[in-house]
Length: 284
Image 1 (cartoon, rainbow, N blue to C red):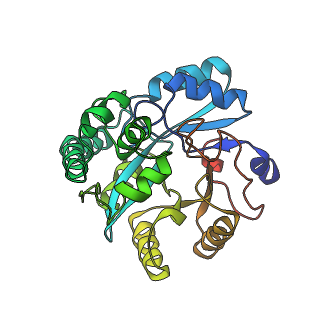
Image 2: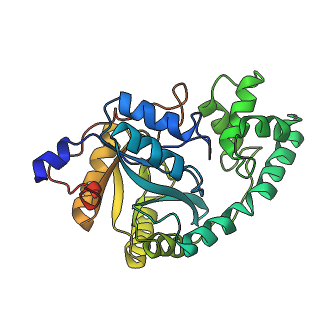
Image 3: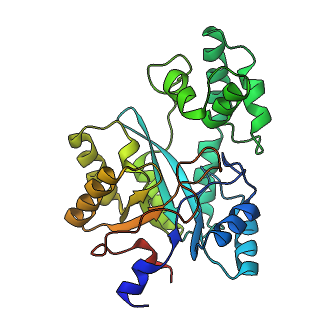
């Protein structure tokens, strides 16, 4: 495929299903992507590979190109950073074991969030969050947020995060995720390409972002999400400049979780700047 044609491809390489904190089942994510004109899709559930087989089969049935992926939680400089792995082998033992290690701490973290919210006067939050988690092994902050919205505590998920679930707020608890080097190593060991997800979301100074990217590249990371559902146009321009300066492949992603919760629907992101090399050149 020619370079110009690559940019015209409607690729969406970061989204979620009920296997982590999305609203739709894996096959329904695929169907929605196809209906929206997506031509290349990656399902990237948080620290989970369980939806990939179903999604791949659904994509094959619809004639949609599919890339197996994952979004790995990483601890860096008192922030939770997300590294997307694209084109991974879901059967590779190293990444399976690494993700299991991450998930093993999630139950304890969820319990601590529930206790912290109870101390802030919101009781029963853990039980409520579990009702929103289709995968009982993965209760996330998003599930707590959905419970608080459904309970009328806050009007929407973003407001819940801002008031309760980010650092410095009553429901936030520290948790040690994977190291950056481990996450990138698992992805590379599974034959995949490591991508820094939605970089504008992290509360890092310019120097902090440079340190993150230094370590990411040194570990073997190769790409960055320039276009993301979480990015403004100014942020897209900023990280396009970063991709050029560092010679990183560029990704495009909605980070879709659900119709009423995500600012951008599947396949509806802005295009990449035409001078950047799309990360999906690896997969077609």
